[in-house]
Image 1: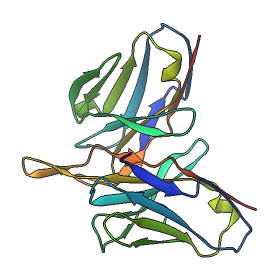
Image 2: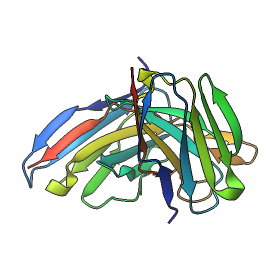
Image 3: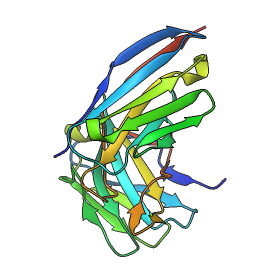
Image 4: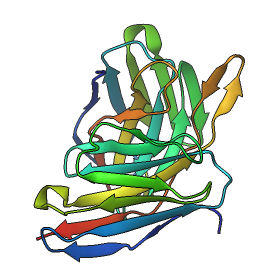
Length: 110
Length: 119
């Protein structure tokens, strides 16, 4: 099945710094999603981004489907950005079943 | 508040005991899912239901059963709990959006999770 790899596994930042999280996937996909899990465990859908770039406030995401990767940018990080960021792709074209990467754990220190 | 509600939030079971995790959503979503999250493993799909009356296996279905009771409710049952089922369980729901001739699945909403320990 499709493999999803995220890097780095852990990232520690000072408040105000910028960061880039990467997601590589092993096969062609027609969509990709980014999720944030806060330190209390709640999961929130951040982006649905099959290709191109989307922005939402200080967060933006870019997917280059032909090269099988996606990037999540966090600018001017805040302590509330802490948590684990997951990317997920369908198990096969058009499927609603998602395969998640292992996540990047982000810690933003004040 | 609208969303996905899971019960219980915490549970400790002895090996061999059974239990049912409950999940309900009030967003009129067709699709519902059960995932488990283990340390360092991300989320893995156990079962999902594309609509009322249908269920299908995900990546790690062994040891679990599910019931889509109606459009709102999707329960997960452990018939004989094992220590390997110690995990955090998440229920989610979703509604497909038609984009041209394709169905797209975004807008996932997750419950707050059930932390299960089997001793």
